[in-house]
Length: 249
Image (cartoon, rainbow, N blue to C red):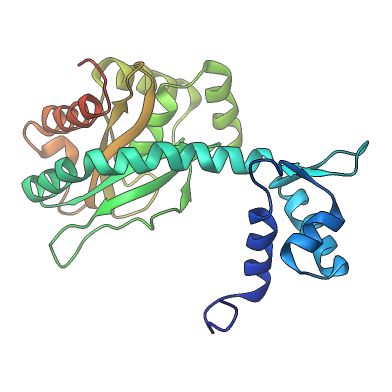
């Protein structure tokens, strides 16, 4: 694999280190990892330090052994949610894109941010696009606000203190309450000048928020407040995805 010119050697070695863990090998010493990967101990030590610094590995000081870290749990949890969610939402997202003529996005929360995990672009030459996997704030933009609206109050307060705001705290809190009431949120040139969006929550089998379905486009063409039945169209689509995920609509 290292003969592939597009493979970054250092990244591949870090992956090899992570792959040395498994069933029956949940905790490993430096020597064991070095033997598993075939890497020199000096190289292994540097990789382990980097992975530990970023919470991909944890070191037990008493035993000197390494265990997989919490960051891998978070990524695995997000991957488990997103894979199923992407599959069941695909057809609905395509129909919504064709119906509204604008880009349709699927978002989930990742820590204190939202990320787009699936996107179906508008077929028009001028369109709004989000980079899949990009971290975006929760305090601005339709999708961010919908995700934020269903979080605990202390988390909401923390995000309002730490992330970019275009409204006062009072105004945003009122909007978040309205979003929960209507299962719908919108934004006009909030996060990015020249773009607008509308969004609706997706729920899982236990009634918990698991994602957001949104539609976005250039503000000069796409104004959520001027599109007939946009709210009902988007909420119905999001509830369709929710039903596919086992939610009792």
